[in-house]
Image (cartoon, rainbow, N blue to C red):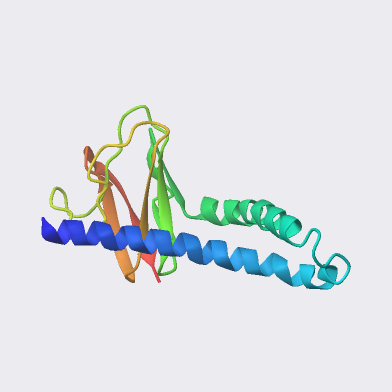
Length: 156
């Protein structure tokens, strides 16, 4: 029980840290072009454009990256059935099926191959479960509510 709580806390810290890391790097990129503009408008609008530009640019740049790391759960099971990602990648499992989805690492029912990779509950249609993979390997998973449906996340 204590190991599960520690694993959940670690996953939460990694997710929050990753969010701020990506948020911080995307804000620093737009500030480079503004350096030349700061000479023209030094104090009047420096804070307004720098606030507006990072907000619009990350939403455009992050959307395609997120879509690459999505596994959809539908009537035909998980798709793609094998997904290759780099260490530290967050994978989003989207439930597009009318029934619930409970993503968990193999083997069923103990979920011990990758400690912490367990949604711990069923997710309804339209809900997403996300997990950040911090260990390299081939990680098989299944729908705990229908163990015959599963897939593999290859972390390199």
